[in-house]
Amino acid sequence: MLTRRIFIGAASALALCASTALAGADVIKLGVLAPLTGPAAADGQEMANGVKLAVEDLNKAGGVAGHTFEAVVADVGDASADKVATAAERLLGDQATGAIFTGYASTTNFEIEMMAEHDMIYLVSANSQQTKDIIAPNPSQFMTVWSLTPSYDAYNTEIVPVVDELVASGKLKLPNKKVALVSSDNPYSKSIANGMVTAFKADGWEVTQNDLLPFGEINDWRGFLAKVRQDPPALLINTDYVSANAATFMRQFMEDPTDSLVFIQYAPSVPEFLELTKEKSSGIVYNALGGPVRTASNPRADEIINKYKAAYKVEPGSYGVMLYEQAMLYADALAKVGDPSKRPEIGAEIAKTDKQTAMGRTRFDPATHLAVQGKDGMPIQFYQIQDGKRVLFYPKDYQNGEFKQPGWMK
Image 1 (spheres, one colour):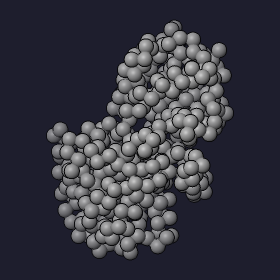
Image 2 (image 1 turned 135 degrees about the vertical axis):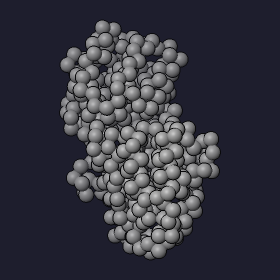
Image 3 (image 1 turned 90 degrees about the horizontal axis):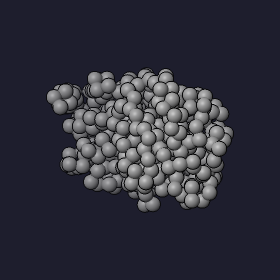
Image 4 (image 1 turned 45 degrees about the vertical axis):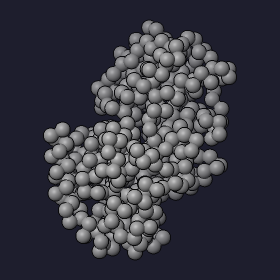
C-alpha cells in the first residue's frame, strides 16, 4: 500500500499544471500504456496500433472541437509495478496529455488510482475484477476511469452451460465428467480458473487438477500434461492469457492428445497464436468478453478490422479494435464538452455512453464503471478454431458456424 501511495503522489505532482496547458492546446496527446516488450508484446503492439489508427482517422476528419491528436506510447514491459508506474508517470507528466488508453497495463490495475488522483481520462479493457474492486467502494472518486470490458463473472460460469448444451445436442461426446485446469500466477488467470472450478463442481463435475504455474514465459507444460494423461479428463482448460505460452501448451498437448475438449482462455484470439500453432490448434475452444462482435447486425466490427488490416497488413485480435473504440469514445465525449482540460466533464459524458460499437451495445454500469454484459450489453462469445479460422458458435443469435468435435477426440 505504501508503494502505491508513493506512485500516486508522484503522478499527482507531475500533473499539477496539465489542465491549464490543455485548455490552449492545438494538439492533444493520447497516451497508450502497452506491453511493447516482454511476453505480451503481441497484445501491446495491437494496443498501440489501435490508437494510432483512430488518431489517423480523427485527424483526417478535421479533428474534434478545434483540436487534432497525437498518439504517444509508453512501454509497461513485463507489467511489474515499477515499470507500469514509470510509464504512467511519463504520460501523466506531459501537460498535453488529454487521455490515456490501455488494454491492460498492470495485472492489478493499481494505476487506476494514479489516473483518478488528477482526473485523467483512463479507459481500460481488461482485469475487470480488479477494476471493480478499486472503483465499486466509491465510484464518484473515479469518474474519469471506465472499462470497455464487462464483469468477468461470465468467464467463470458460462462455460458450464455451453458444454452441457453441446453434449445435449449431440455435437460433443465426452468420455466422463472430469475437468483439469492449469493457470499462471496472476490475478486474471487465477480468478477465472478458480471461478470455473466452483461452477464445474456445482454442476457435478470432478476437478482432477487445478494447477498453478509461475507467471511469465512458460516453455514446458509437459509436467502438467503428464498428469493429465494419467487420468484423462473430458475437458482440459488453460487460463494463461499469453499467446506464446498457450501455443506451446497446444503443441505439447498434441504430442500425445487425450480424449479431451481443450479450452484456452483468451490467447487464441491473438493472431500470433494461430501463426505459432498452425494446424495443431484446429478444434480448440475459447471465449471473449468485450471482443469484436462480427455479425451482419454489427457491421462496425468488420469496418474497423478491415481498416486495421489495410493499415498494418494483418488482422487484429481484440485489442487493436478495442483501443480504436476507446479513442473514439473519448472523441465523442470531447466533441460534447469542447474543452480538453475539462476532464471530469468529459468523464461524465463517457459515463452516458449508449451506442453500438465493434464490441456490441456499449454502456457502463455506474456502480462499477464496467461495461454492461448480456443481452442489453456486450455478449460473451464462444469460438472454435477450425482449419485456421475462428468460428463463432455461441450464442446462437450471433453464430456464424457450428461447433465440431475435435479431430483428436474419439
